[in-house]
Length: 331
Image (cartoon, rainbow, N blue to C red; front, top):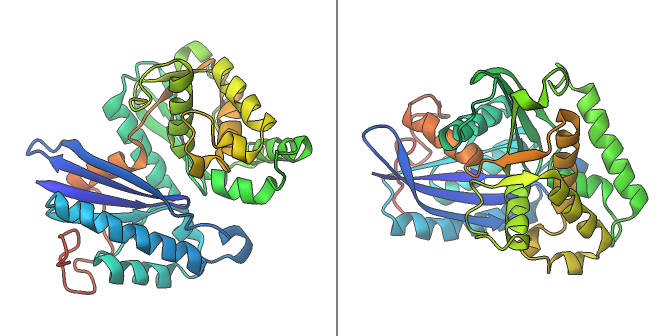
């Protein structure tokens, strides 16, 4: 049975189509992504803006064709930071439901973090006593600290690549003072987090440091291009701190138009990549890690596993058109 999962993010819209097996596992059949910037202006206005919603609805129309083409029997939709914080989230959810016939579930930050960790455990061998996983989105970054494979602490912090760009980076090329203020802000968010992030007190040799999210996947592709490996297969990539720092310096040294030409960096992500790289670099410094492991599946694959296991509850049994929640609507 093919199922579809639509991930409505702050920066982009993602579609995962998978074949679910009787053994409660899945194989990915299709994946696509559209930059929609649903969360543009959210920090300033407190609400989702019409242009961002229109871009999202337009991308959803294209996704409907993919879903029909793969004959998906069930369709799920979820959203993250943008709709958690928006004052008009209800109206946006209604517009999306009217458009695709499925009402999205808004994940909590804790759910996002847990699903990212579930996905990483499925894809990677995490055999160190401690694991720190972080997932960088457009509006927030989620953290998990696990000991011997069991989650101990989970946090969601307002360190999203899109929102940090809007808040701090106004110049082109990026001004050094702006970047310094960005770094200070990231440090302050870490310091003020409650409970404190478990960066200290763990020996680097006892720690698996794992990351997922758009900025992380983009970094993996950029490094794959520099190393002349297959940039379409970043899932097993391990990133060295020296390579990250070199790419960050390169992005800071050039204009936006030049950043768009960097191999592996999608042009529609070039304007928000620097804050994402800055967050990654600071976490690696704080943990004392010279290497970072990429988990490509991210929140969406963990959420799909939770759906398969019936661990994720949806807003209602039926949508506004009377379709069972998760059933493919009549398009």
